[in-house]
Length: 270
Image 1 (tube, rainbow, N blue to C red):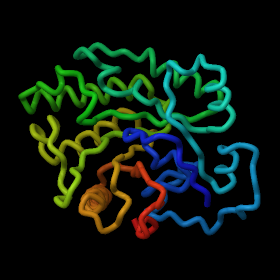
Image 2 (tube, helix red, strand yellow):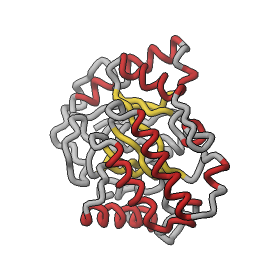
Image 3 (cartoon, one colour):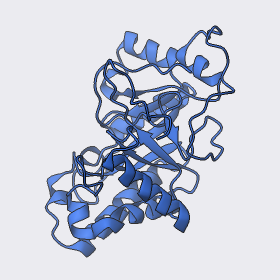
């Protein structure tokens, strides 16, 4: 299996379903459910080369994607490489809260629509990124001080965005980067965590499933590749709990910001 690392360090780029093989719970190209494994025993020989990255990934039932900026779609070199090499795209910033709902109840889908339309016309699937995240929030959300208000706002945002793209987005990063760095294995402080408590992630996933029953629902985070890390274990416990109680979750994104040393030795276990 060959995993190609994109240039740059995109903390918000969800690589779990984008890079070949870096996914768990579910996420093969045919969308069939799978357990949290990452074997590739059926993969073709490395000597078999396809003409594009997307075609190479397809040989082992995967797909290969990239982050896309709407403002770059008019660049001929950019769009040529995008259209030729990739069969999945993720908007860089165009689906984040500060773009899609800068004012309460007023949605702006123009930039994201450009990406979705471009992807659809070129046979590429779309991974939506992201619905609930502590960062890139408009100030009116981060300043909410009442739990019931925030719960209503969060649910309305998920319903509004997912409803607009129902049937057009293959998978969503429903909640992004909700766990703290360090040794606690707990959630990070955020307006969602502070007002709604640990249950806000479950609430977001249940709302997302009702908003679009056909979309894959993902949790995404960084620094969760090393099995023994508290943060990794925290996410694992959450996913295991959700699966045991029927909370809808289909996939986990590993951002996989590997340096020259590559992934940790325990990555396959993770």
